Amino acid sequence: MNGCANQASKVEGKVLSHRRLTILSVAFLIVGSILAGITFQRNPHKTTVAFQNEIAVKTENPAFKTPRSLAELLDLSPPELEHCDIAQMNLLCAESLPGAENLNVDEMLVTLDAWAQHIKSEIDRNFHHYGEDPAYFYNSTNFYKMAMMGVVLYEDYSIRYNPKWIAPPGAESPDDHFFADSRDVLIHGLIGDQHLGTCSSMPILYIALGRRLGYPLKLVKAKGHLFVRWDSPAEKFDMEATSKGVHYYDDEEYRKWPFPLSETDIQEEDYLKSLSAKEELSVFQVLQAANVVPQVRSPVSLSPSRWIQRDTIAKPGSDRVYAKQGQQVRPDQANLYGFVNNDPQNEFDPFGLESSKPPKPDDVPECYTSQPLPPSDPVCDRYGERTYLGASLKCFCKTPWLDDPWSRYVRACLACMDAKGVPIGDAHSACYSVADKTYPRPTASLGLAWCSCRK
Image (tube, rainbow, N blue to C red; front, side):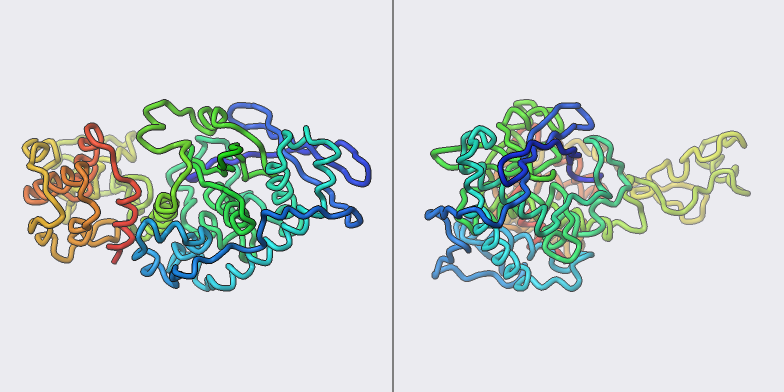
């Protein structure tokens, strides 16, 4: 799946004195609604106005030790993460991922500092546009600042949504390989040579730059999408950062786009909430995990239970194979996906004559009522050196901060199913699903645990 939605833009112009102010109309490919954004053609001869409450770069906390690696980042406590640069968190999560082989985090942070200085000067120098017509900026000097940031990023630094991934919401496919290149989902793709990103990375770039200027910007989740929020006691508004320029919204827009949200969705998944630093990191770790999983799961493709190799059906001798499995093959029914009952992850047929099938979760219903277990329970040691999706099962089971009711239930359920021989993938799906019906899932804590236990 492509992981996030985007917008496509067209430009309409209105001429002002000494400068052209462009109002962008954005046609949603899925809902057809029209949105407004702003870009400028800047005039170098106008008088500047300085916003005294801003700073050119972020202020460091002298007591905070900046992490230099992903391991150091994951060792930080939630209060310490609040002092961590969102750009540094994002870039460190790209460590060792495809597309980040030559990543230099320090150089990219220096680049962001320079960009922030330039954006600040352009915001000050072009402030006369706000004075000439405040209504174009929703009578908000803060939105003017963000709009000007979007202009500079688009015109001076050629920041663009990667055209490869422009598609209407819902048009993704399981095998589109959106997560194959980390540059498409983390911000080094925007700061590096290609200057391309998606909704997974572009909002983080705006937030990283804005925080360097002292702006109270937050990362917010919608379904299949990330966006930016100006969140201060005096003013709050949402912004779409994936088009040419930025667009001004309130939460109602993201209740409908890119996918409708129910109240249950909002409560269970923390949609439309200004995220904490710990929650921001969990978002980046989900993107990191998605980039790793395709490598972990090969030689099986991203579509569940589908072999990369050609199916054996209709090949010489296949009639005997399927007859052995109680199936009949006709010449006009090629590719019936009957090989190991279309479940190659959990069944095997070493000689092409039969399928040996381990128990399914519903074959051991007693596991659903197992007594909840804490992280200190010795049952975790039974996993030994085994891994699942690239993480140590023993480490994950013993993670001390996974001690909430959901985690205790899942730990016991998984241990029971593992003892009964249920494949670990099936067990996770079943235990997670049952736990979700009773307890809130600790998504951020699970993301931290996965990265801490990654092999």
